[in-house]
Length: 107
Image (cartoon, rainbow, N blue to C red):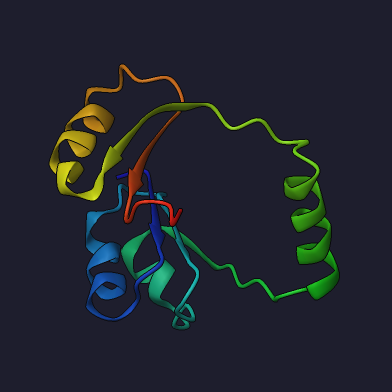
């Protein structure tokens, strides 16, 4: 692999070193990069952490509430058809998002 984005940590993080090509790049959002590990495996690595910002989240909520974002939804399927949704996603022939409905809207 040229790039691994680790969002799980633990064993997944440890196994990521060995799947990278020489000079590959490991980015982890959950684990600190051990000193000397990138050099040991001949790769580059970076920890990427974010912090919650209530003001930014409020701005994002406003944009959504004002419908300034126009999501493209290809199809909406019931949760029982999750396998079909996965197959559609894997086909790479869908434009937009595939939504799984967990429950019917209360009337």
